[in-house]
Image 1 (cartoon, helix red, strand yellow):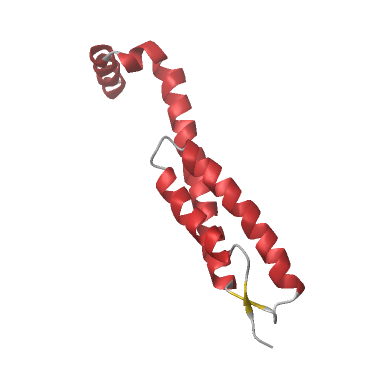
Image 2: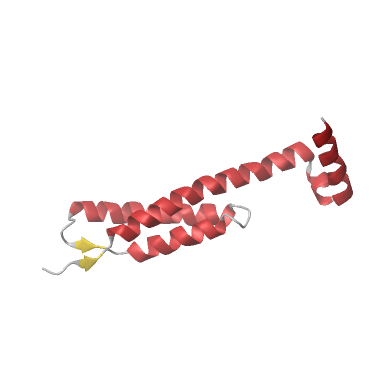
Length: 110
């Protein structure tokens, strides 16, 4: 019997790669793509574990899942960093370059 390619194995890998790239865009795209990638990886893993002799391409699913987990953690850290900056400095300070520079100098001196 010939092995079939695991459904969505390539999609999980692509979503894992794109989610890592999405971390650079304020974390939101990376977070969304990582969650979608983990959902597809979970479904593909269950399908593979039900009959491993029938499918191939599980390596793509594992690699995509690992990248999605890394991206999820990085996106959450980045989003928390942005929220902290808004809470600590204030939204008006972040929009005013001179005021932000003053606050950063105060932060360095203390």
